[in-house]
Image (cartoon, rainbow, N blue to C red):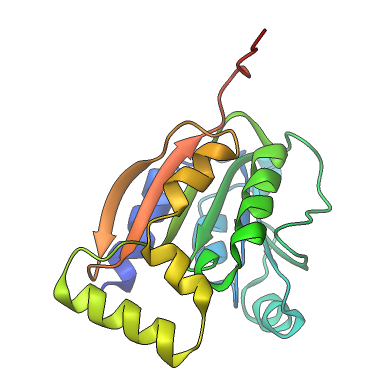
Length: 197
């Protein structure tokens, strides 16, 4: 992140507007750095915790060993198939996960995030997006070809806001851009579903 990791993480944590009792889900948590930063703001005695999930068992093993605490938990789970209760979490967060996921699984993961959030619950996604600088374009397009990931190409075409809305969320706000290609989007689950008739 070229020195931007701390303000990037701080932006995510601050935007969540955490309360001690909040339950937060971190999709594609990797080794759990962000999960732990969030969890440290929560109070397990009040019911607060952050659960980090990732489909990579090795990542979860590292996260569990290095970062688990009474308010910080980890589990091996696919974001598109969450074995979690409906309307259970106050917030869902994801950092640099969705550019690894094919378009259909992006949509399924967002639908699952919507399902497990309480009405009014927050969704915060930080990920690759349409580049806004020459440096951002250079890095994102190079990564797309170097790693042979068409999923990156989807992100840099700007698909995330529409996919988020299509999952049922309020149209997301673009809060910030880092390095000219990493966007932070914030939105929430509506309190009431629209009824068409």
